Length: 431
Image (cartoon, rainbow, N blue to C red; front, side):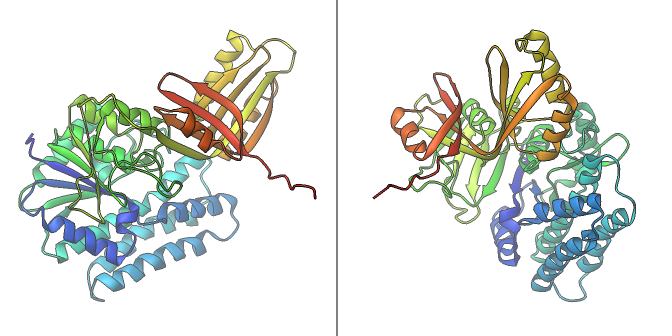
């Protein structure tokens, strides 16, 4: 393979409307003549909208087609701003949505996660068709590649695992020859296919991971993620006023930050790159000339406090029904069930008679988990919580983050502190 291949990933925010797509094309003009593979996400909030289609179809409430038509309308409105009325992209996009319409005409599949993957994946398929067609229109020849022909996975729907040997083989056979200096190759993030050729997804925000898979299999020179921020920041600028950009970051630090909830990169992205020492650039599509952040092997032990906040958290307080201690055999049962229902445990704590876990509040999974263990265990659920994680913490930072908060669970290491908190009601003073 040629190490000169580069991999770019553009997320939903970078292609959410006609102006943003035009901006992406402008950025890519500077890379004409480069062996470049481009990964794109669904546009804007399309994935959220398609999740509502799935829920409506499962509920059979009669709203699924109405919700899908809203998604289709927004995409066709976009075409009107980018293409002439008789452009071939209209028919291509129509064919893309037809498959989902066929699925909605059938009874809901008994496996919700399977059904989810078949429907939600249309977001990436639609956006990639549009962007590839627009790049070609801008004199940037672009070959559209179906990621499902390359990314081979198991059949763990909504969180599929990569079959690396098969994916490497498919990459050699399907993708490499098309990545030339004469044309870009553009594909989808987030999606793959099982051995039965059913569509799978890699988990929400999984397009970063897709780009890392391609980078690994292609022995890429480097990988770039294009964001609406200037690089990796010490905190989410939507939540905090005083944040600073990190010019350089080690793979290890990036893994830690993303694992604990920093949204700038998908948690699974770093490891494939680290294994082959492929540099990762996090750059701004708003200011493409900016330096961004370089993530590589370089180690820097001097980092400022870095804050990640995970919303939509729930704490499950689990105790035995027979008044016995929560012992090792109980833990074995619980961990097996946690794995079965794919609960993402962000923090855990146990006492003699109870076991508390903080998880992402995916209500359908939590409900199935609780139903499965309720004969042996009593479960109390507390919702509407936040998980605050601070890397390289100091007391001043912790105190500022806990204003108006009550701490329910805490975990601490020399480098990292995690706090599950809820808002404290403001008490009115008596006069």
